[in-house]
Image (cartoon, rainbow, N blue to C red; front, side, top):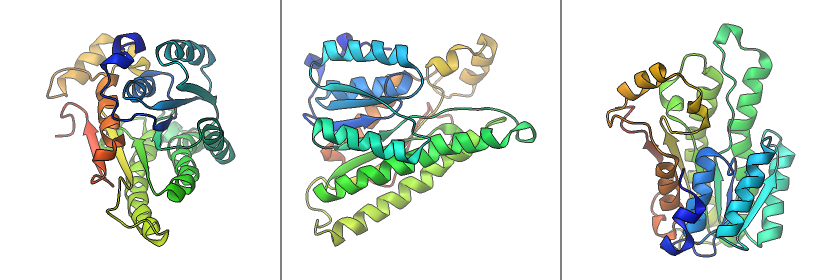
Length: 273
């Protein structure tokens, strides 16, 4: 993955100058790439994490060196509703506001349906879907007061296509599609009622990005023969890079993308064609 030093503040177009972004699961993999990109584009980034303390500390040190005074790291369990609300409050208290929420954090607990325990199902839904709901609910209260904001949900191609042994994961990621579209409609309605005319300014949008096979730790343990099978299904013939997801997230977070809401953005090399 490209490092913060390589991306560097000097290479940024600063399109998100001084915006504040909360990225859940923001210290590793796709989330880290999103955090890097948003910071490079001028944003103050609050990166959330749960269990992986050592990578979070390394990420914090690297990002602080590259973007002094613009990076915070927040420990929290997005599978818990109150912890979701606490983290949002913590970010607003430390940064003064919240402009962008990226619901990226998620887990897998893969088993075929007949072997899936109750906890395997409930935990994945709680983290991947309910967590996005509770974080969005808390963020929207603040964004509505300001009349502007961006919520970007990170789903998965599995949510569209399904996967053997991934009924819980696919259901949680598919659920983000309905959540995205419902929130997008509600925000327009609520903005009008709150005295923020639709079409006036950058607005408040909600969108979803669906990565395909991306080169992260999740794929690193997969045997090469299996990876060859994956690549053979991708029309562009390769695995995606985390930075390619981050680029789309940054685009949707920009004020100039205010005419885009309630949309599902597939970034998968044509996997679902």
